[in-house]
Image 1 (tube, rainbow, N blue to C red):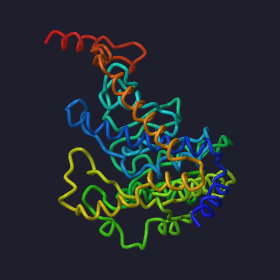
Image 2 (cartoon, rainbow, N blue to C red):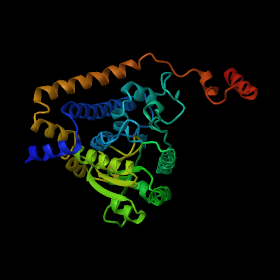
Image 3 (cartoon, rainbow, N blue to C red):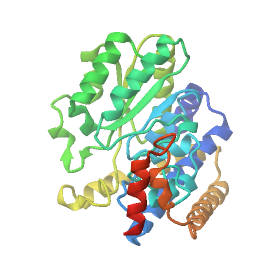
Image 4 (tube, rainbow, N blue to C red):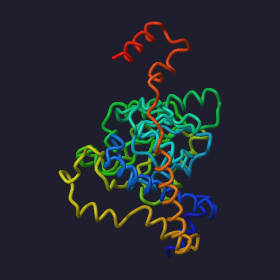
Length: 347
């Protein structure tokens, strides 16, 4: 039965064996890099950090449903989305530590991502603030007759915001080529989803805005990939936006400043770990001989070594130069700013 289900899913996703192995590799990379980042935080080497453990299928599966010309509007837990789009472990670790090799030169919070060359738009800390921007970007592309779709990510807590309403309402009225992915991990910091909404689920809210809506198993790579691929196809045909609810679970605290034991039980966490997205995907690939136990072990070892090398590459990279504080803002640095900088250096 599992092989039949996977065969149908593979046909639906249209992914070759090599692509499935690559997707599994990225999911592993996301988890192992996450563990390394938590270790670095515990050592005091990086600041605030939001873990992505448990979200890997929602992240990687969704990107595998997109095209390379599509634009991504992530939120702060989307490490797997970035890695699936080609951002390297080194780039993420440099961002987390804020060293001289960080593209942002340590100017932003570690998990506020922006990688222009990968079509990953800058996000901000306030939840749902990326949603309206993604719709506006999609509408601009539509006006210019560009064949691209935008995808915006957020948690279920963001659906209680005015930004969520404004973005989906606008997308519905103007049939924006937009995809909204709600990573429903059941808790917005400490607030359970039952206190966020009285609706039976998140995706049903799409009906109010006149757009398509679907709830999928966010721990199933194939379910997520198929849903996003279908939404992308719908949007590119001018049929409007889609709200996809990926039901998943975060194993970690909300962030490195959170104590999850104050609002959920260890038993609940362990129960969800039995539905681990990486284990599920691995077993699906093993069942159809896309992977073997030997190839999976070799792949795990390779990814672990990749993460270790990325972490080692940070050693010796200095902090951003002080001069960078007044660079990249003005074409010609104003005299007043130069004077302030010189005064700073003298203190």
